[in-house]
Amino acid sequence: MAEDKCGVAGCNGQAIKSYSREAVEKAGLRAADEKGKRMHLCKEHNKQYKKATKEDRKLESLGR
Ligand SMILES: [Zn+2]
Image (cartoon, rainbow, N blue to C red; front, side, top):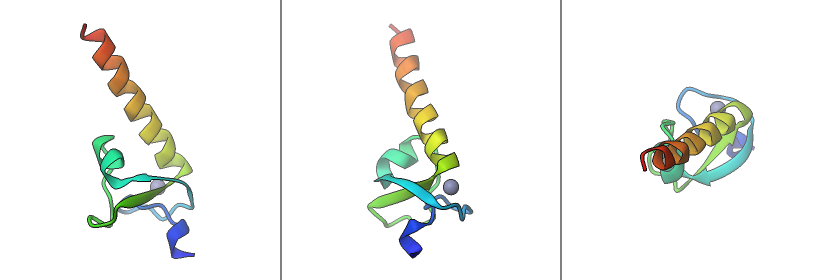
């Protein structure tokens, strides 16, 4: 069940979602496994990820 753990460095939460590591790192989260292609996220980090990606989009539209 190791794959069900959150992939963020220092976090041991139970994963609920998985994304590409690249996308997660772009959102500002640090991967524990720097070579993995996919990354699981726990509830908290999933929230952070979504918030970060949403804010990116918001900043982009505001810049125009
Ligand atoms: Zn986590």
